[in-house]
Image 1 (spheres, rainbow, N blue to C red):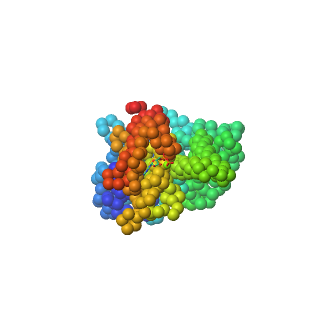
Image 2 (image 1 turned 60 degrees about the vertical axis):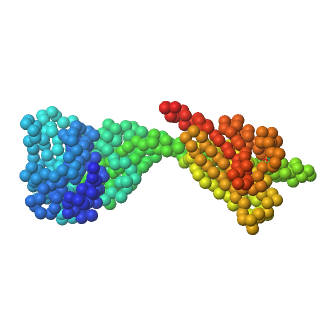
Image 3 (image 1 turned 90 degrees about the horizontal axis):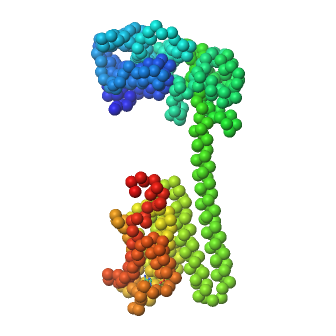
Length: 501
Ligand SMILES: Nc1ncnc2c1ncn2[C@@H]1O[C@H](COP(=O)(O)OP(=O)(O)O)[C@@H](O)[C@H]1O
Ligand SMILES: [Mg+2]
């Protein structure tokens, strides 16, 4: 369906400023529909000439009454003779009331209100409701209808809609939230039942009607400012930690003077409490991430201190290896923490890991090039961490062993270490490929006793339920192939959430 602006542009001669005026109106006209218990329809002439048809630009149904229209007629075009009251209102620029016969036996009461901007009648707002019949009206109904009439008069004089800058920051107010009618002195003339409840929440326990708005705790400032600026004012009042009330104050104007106002009050206590809870949970998660990171750093420092006191070269190397492994976990933790609110693909985690190894290679016999290709998709955090340690170990082995004594075979061409990621339907494949010297002659992967490969095998086979295979590369070097079954790549939380599993 076309928007109001699109309809105006394609079907009418309205200027941008006039369209904006109508948008201001439709931004708050739900309120007017509720006050009049009626459908509101907005008509504009197709072009400026008087004989041209009328186009229906918009329609809003009341939440306080039943609609006369089941179908959506927006965008339809009507001959003026079919809408005589609307045409008269448009041509004369004044409110026209009457009744219209529809179908066989139904009369609807129609009030056509010119929407004026400066000296021009831009459009016509039609209020259409079934004829009220003889049923006596209650006080609330009478009050709402009279407030609607005051707004209708403001429209006719071009004093409404207000240029509402704040409109988009708040949900449009509805009468059902709670409505107070205030006179020009700021005394409450009428309060809807919901409004009375809100006043009680604010701690006002005596009669609401007859009291001054100032005494309710709702800002006196708001009313003064709405009267002075002759536009709507929005305010949020917090009473201790108990109640948060949003109020929209719309001044009722008569030729530039405020003769009163309506104040729509809405209890948003629960909404705001939920907001606060979310913010504090977020802060807690951040704090926990921070502490984990600090703890990892502390462990590294302790080990480094320890290493410095060791005299055995072998022992020192072993402890330094551990520091390096903790470093890898730190890198992963950091990447995961920084993306706490969105998932990160494993490829994004591998990059900083590669960088860390790259930076640790000092004085290489042969320059090394690292590459990451393919995509592993998004993995659960625990799998990410485990797999990251495995990949680091394999990259480190390539750096440590593949290029020993292979100084620049073909005139200094760099050594290559490639990490290939491939997410297939049934498994995740991670290959770490180098073009170095290859595995030792007598290498038997099944009883390799080095700590690195032991960690790799334990993590891949036990923790991830996968396989690890080391083989010679197609031309030279070594290929380490890690395969993880797809069933291990979904987090248990996802499992619980997805009913199809
Ligand atoms: N990419 C590789 N190229 C050549 N040899 C390798 C490669 N990866 C592993 N190896 C061999 O496997 C052995 C075991 O590795 P590992 O368990 O990580 O222990 P460490 O790295 O401490 O020696 C290494 O010592 C090395 O001989
Ligand atoms: Mg190793």
